[in-house]
Image (cartoon, rainbow, N blue to C red; front, side, top):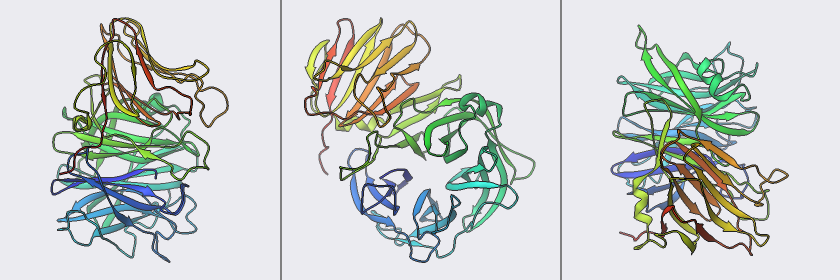
Length: 442
């Protein structure tokens, strides 16, 4: 599995789709997998939602997109690619066959794309990943793009009628000063654009930065303004930065709810492919917003507390065995190093907190990644404060760190047979840890 697609709430139930190859743990033969939940904690798998249509516009894959309510009918808006796509997709629709089915099991694709390719005259070399949103009562769509001169961009479409899309211009490109300051000039395409409104009225544009391969993710905060005509919409970026500071997070998808926005990401494999029967996981849901200074505000979804065991396994500094899945919070008023994993060589997976400097460092020790050599530590900077708090969600090889409510680090660390899962917390550090357990049904 890879990109999360179309997070959607329908009649009190969350639905989450994802790119999925049902035949092998490799990126090919892309379908849409499907799961749903009443509460973000208990999830149920459903049959595959979207399957490539032989001879159709999606015969080589049903790639990323979103799901929207179109007049009472859940509708998937996704990238279809044929055998000769060369990076240019089409925009396809599929509708829920029975909107009254709470599981939304069956989907019916429309035979003809609503957009057959990029607009003429733009020299676009990459075109994919539609995202539909509403602004001032009108429906719009973003499409990720990259131009032949190496400039990444987001294209804007007026799609108030979901079957009739009209190109409305380039919403933003890599030459924008705020984007250039936040991301530099490495990316040649912006994939999976997502847009959400904050509680304070600002908008956040989420981008997956492509440089010939998936690279990293970023965000820009700013205003979304309507011009003189109702079909004139522009995004004015204020500031931005990396969305996740880890090396194993990409293609996030956003669900805008009335009082918050939720985000899921894809955490790819940091190991060499082959030798396993699965690949790729989705992260835990995150609540995203912005701080007054424009920096990202992010926390794990509160519903994840439903996964906590009845009692915490640690409430004081010292040493404790770690379960395979846990939710750990540590707070320090001075420099502190917390160990999460120990290898037979004596190396440790550590989280170092420095409130005075406003830094959190994730040091992987000697746990390798796909690239050669020992991975460099990941350092995150936040405003210095009297006390610094880090929350760690760990589940097998997936580690998700939340630095206060200002930064995220997502990394994959694969445990070896002789590794010891042991927590070591120095004195003076506040700590609480809960094992994560499957929730009760019902």
